[in-house]
Length: 293
Image (cartoon, rainbow, N blue to C red; front, side, top):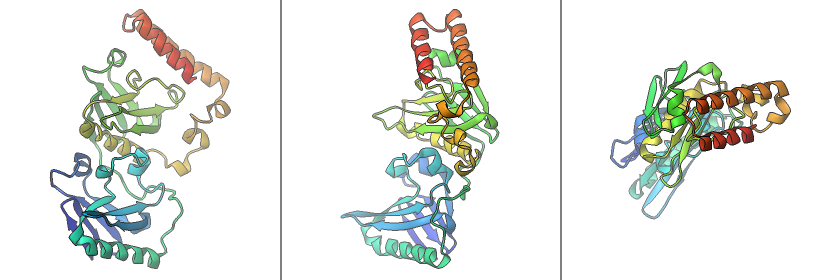
């Protein structure tokens, strides 16, 4: 077995699986510690490289496109320190890192693992149920439905609509952008009805606006990954499911478009009449809905 143990974590390769265990040191990001151990089958690996630097090096594992729901959900936008497929290596352990990398490369060569994108997820993602408290509210996923409970600091429009519950069958995809600490992020649950609507995250009742602690908000990627792992794989979706926002004009019928628009405007009108939305908020939100269509 090829193994390297560092403060940042432990990587062990037995010829079949690369087992990645996060370190327990306080410098290891909360996201990696919460995500836990990851067992990467050799068929999911496309390559491995050791990158030496002056004081420390980095061991990086590259996965085949489409094999991991975490990479699918986050789109490669995880901060480097939170990336579980990156290991910081002390300079005196560079030789061990090179040995581990070479063992994995030799196994890839011998097994002739495929290079093309995977047509199914080869990693399971985080177990369910999973719950995360973010700056905008609590989001939970039990494997069958997503529930969002808004916080006291959420926008009035969201709080007025009450808890949002979405069955997995209603969802088309999850859009996720991290809160970097300098720029807000969001997690949006896209359904067939809301795929055309592009409200700002702070007012979208299908989205969490991530503006608080970037360390805590990063954990929303756990929910995004767990949901993504249970949605149809991108390779099996029809083009109007995967690229519907981009090709909406070509794939959606005018009747469906019109019905969804009317329903969204009716909901906004009711919130305005009930005094939940001010005149200014109603006008701004209505304009955003119309731009989305």
